[in-house]
Image 1 (tube, rainbow, N blue to C red):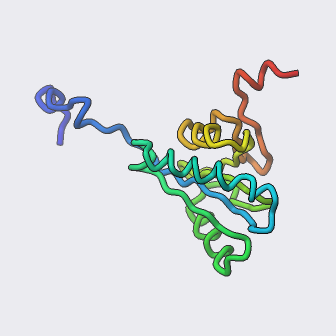
Image 2: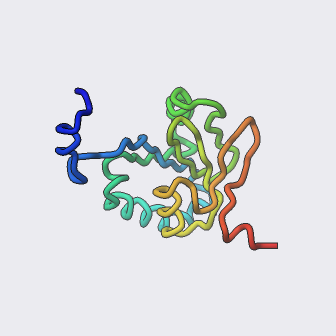
Length: 148
């Protein structure tokens, strides 16, 4: 369809949806891990918040991978098959990550529901790490810049 003036007139805020890349938010954890146990209530609260978030409800998904899961490596390999560049690796527990636009970003902020939800929905503005060229690079926010 050609974009003529007539066609553009019928585009409204209600019927025009900007392109959103699918997002996957994930947790790799171990039941025996104390840090994972303390994260559980915050993770559950974040999941509940994301279920009600309009954009995430439409374009997002959540995955949880337990250390003793016999399909753990298969699940990670499936995620890595869709990643451009550095792959998902669980070097410790819990590993919180998101995949958006073919890139893996690890969460490095506070382990509280509000911070997790904000990070999951705002392109990593809550202290995530983005893997680039084999090294971790911290996202810098105003809050981080002023710290000494």
